[in-house]
Image (cartoon, rainbow, N blue to C red):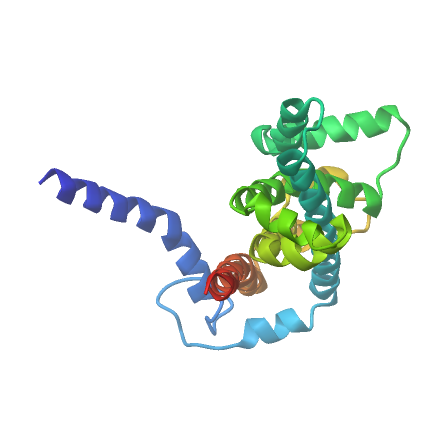
Length: 261
C-alpha cells in the first residue's frame, strides 16, 4: 500500500511538471491562431511562419554560434583543468577545485549580477565577448565534473606504459588519454552547448544591446503578446535541449562499450 501511494504521487508530480510542456507542443500544431481547446485541426503553419521570421532566425544563429564557442572553450579548459587536478599534485588543489565548481553552487542571478557589477567597476562595456565569458564560467563546472568522473576511472599505469615505450607526454595524451576520455568529453561538450543555448538569466544581464538569443527573443515576444509562433519556437527548443543530451548520452555509451569491448 505504501509503495502504491509513492508510485501514484510520483506519477502526479511528473504529470504536473511535464503536462504544460506537452500542451505547448500540442498547441504548436494547432491550425487556429488562438491557443485553446478543442483544437480546430492540425497544421504546420506556425513552424512555416517561424522559419520566415528573420528576428527569430537571427536569434537562432546567435544562440548556435554562442553555444558552439561556449562548448569548445569550456571543454578545452575543463579537460586541462581535470588533468591537472586529477593527475598532478597542484599546490592548493582543493581550493582550485572548489573555485572551479563554485559557479554551479551559486544562484545564476547572483553570479550574473556580480560579474556585471565587477566589469562595470572596470569600465568594461557589454559585448559578445562578455556574454561568451559568462556562459563559459557558468558551464565550465558541468564539464569538469563529467570529465573528472571519467578520468578517475582511467588507470594511470596505461599512460605510464605508453611513456615507458617512448611516447612523450603530449603523444600519450592524444593517443591514449584523450581517446579514453572521448565519451566524457563529448558528453561535457553537449551539456555545455545545451546549457548555453537554453540560458536566459545570465544572458539578460550580459548581452549587449541589439543581440538576442532564442530564450531572450521568446521573452521579448511574450512581453507584447502570446503568438502561436511562440508555441512552435518552444517546441523546437524542447527538441533541441532534451534531444541533444539524450543523443550525447547514447553516443557516449556506445563509444564506451566499443572501447570496453
